[in-house]
Image 1 (cartoon, helix red, strand yellow):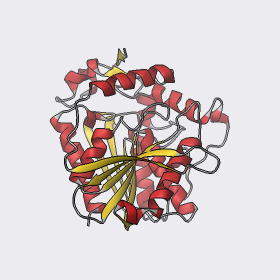
Image 2: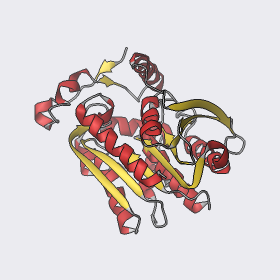
Image 3: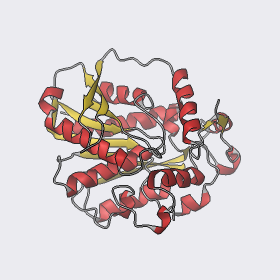
Image 4: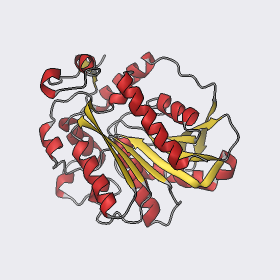
Length: 320
């Protein structure tokens, strides 16, 4: 079983009243040990209640992987109403080392049901067994497959977006950069929720939050080490690994970025959003006060409001 988070007392951090009672019981997923973290997250997934899929159809497909790599499994969530629909690629979180198609299944069901778009969730390869660029190349290959099969999937080609949570946010931002640089599919949205953006971890929030619930700077440090390899601090990092490293953010699709106050990733997400705005990219920034990493996954009214807001963003950007 997973341990509980060694979080700083709620009164010191000023967590939102709905979240403060949860802090001490939040499972602590130690990404320094990927096998243990994977076992812990599977235990959590087994405890989640069934989700209502009555308004959508859920199927799994195997699509061609990047050159020389294994095929990629995707899960497709299709609204039960006539299309064509917007299409949203979803890349799950998990610090690059854990997670699978079940990790954010409930969120994908909600987006397909309530935003009325086809959601394609990607089962990408994980580090450290498959370090960068394996995972992001899997995600990009899946995007290319979707772009070639929009008619079959009921997706409008001009309403295709990428999205992800935490490490999935890094993958979504990176795929947007790759699509621009490689002349790939035109994207209408990049949705980045609590995104991992920069391996340098040189922001005030990264320097401060070493013991916050769910995710802390030690988690970030371990995740980057697994993803980029030992000694990565002394090598040049690709912007397709850490999008905050990209020198030029012009020409990217419209963005919406969600951050949490007590999250070491907060400032790098906000900084990336500001840089997108400076580059002329239409960008929405939503900073939630009194919250921690992925606070919207814990069944509170505040989390429901956050999830509904994100769903509305997707519906506005990709809806008919």
